[in-house]
Image (cartoon, rainbow, N blue to C red; front, top):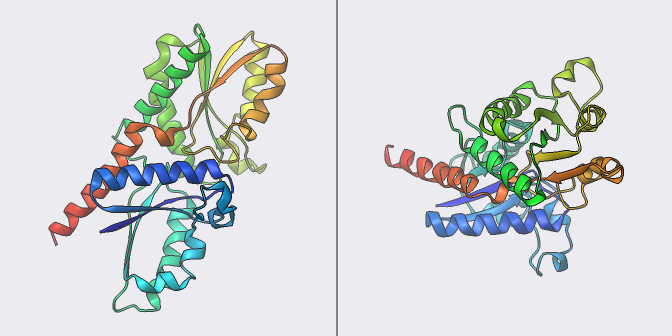
Length: 275
């Protein structure tokens, strides 16, 4: 059996290279081939920036002759929650692919990483936060759990659920905690994203905070959570004014994330055995 490990896609080489590493490790652990795909964009990166191997995206793959050589696609979402990318775009486009040979083709989309009752995301993000505290030498810092921001309440709820449990887990080693978003749409119906990271940092600094951990609720180092990404730019003005800000590593490389993905594959294979 072959699985397609699918993230949103990126124009940043670091994101694609990390996806490849994760897919390779999953292939070795599961005994089944796992192929990394961006949903979009990844095929546009210069192969010279990807160790000579071109990036691939579902957008490009599904319209290529290669898509006509397979009869089944099992999608393993590398998404924290039920993004429109995997609830709308992916099923719609996989259905179009299937309809070309409806009698022989089939597809299956597995669950995203967050599922109620599974504390592995909380444990992973909390551990990465602890590492950031130790790395920076902080004593009782403030912690901001930040995601991109979303128009979907159900995606936002993933952040809020994880944040609620994370706050309990790290409460003894922090001075303050809040969830927040990097950006949001301006309309009032998207207020559930608030506060924005920039506004939260301003408020904390005004209250006297000088040590802050920005806990990145991101899987890969794309243009938002990469070394010189948007989050780094938001933090820069505060750092120039003497505030010490340490950003946690991204979640994608944590062993617990790989455990979740491996469990998805094994559960999927077990469902085949019951048929």
